[in-house]
Image 1 (spheres, rainbow, N blue to C red):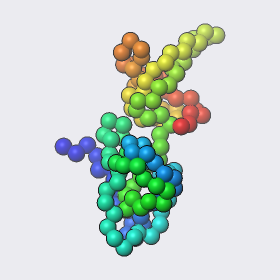
Image 2: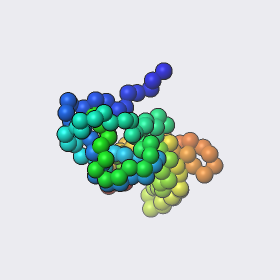
Image 3: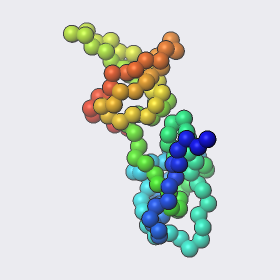
Length: 133
């Protein structure tokens, strides 16, 4: 069963090129690419979909300006699955902070599931409004 078709065709003649070099296994997001005219030759698949983290990942190390073909690359989330974040709970003047691991990607102001140091999965209140990657 296919969970999601991630790399979708863009408009005809509109290809994606890397703005910066990336290492093998690195997440490639919309701010890492730019659009341009497609090369005359076919472009082999250079990205793979990581279903656990819901991101595009580089299959191999690539250089700046390398063509990725006609693919859709989503914007980077404020928090990605696997990121270590600090969860802060406040009651009155008391604030308790705890290091947790995000279990899903999330944007600023969204709630997300996290795993604490004891292995418990909890729903974190929400990301801070200014949360950025």
